[in-house]
Amino acid sequence: MSRRSSLDTIPDVRDGLTRAERVVLYTLAELQVERRGRNVPTAMLYGRVVERMDMSVDELQRILQRLGAARGYGG
Image (cartoon, rainbow, N blue to C red):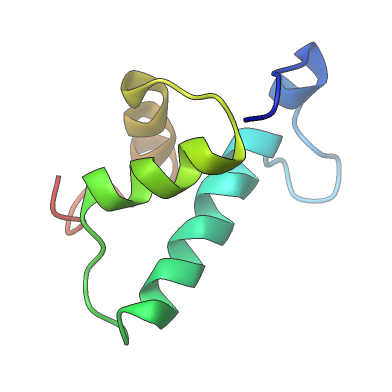
């Protein structure tokens, strides 16, 4: 598990995404391919995200809400 840095919370100038948001989106895309387009349960997404970076369940929920993906992902 990687350690969190204060730089992880600064949005990238290219698209405004933080590192945590980028990890969530990348992981979600991977899981959707694995599941052949079916909805990804939030618990499954969380399990895969924490393999890449330290994140609380609340933080994941906030990111999903901010990105507009909270509905339809089997929370």
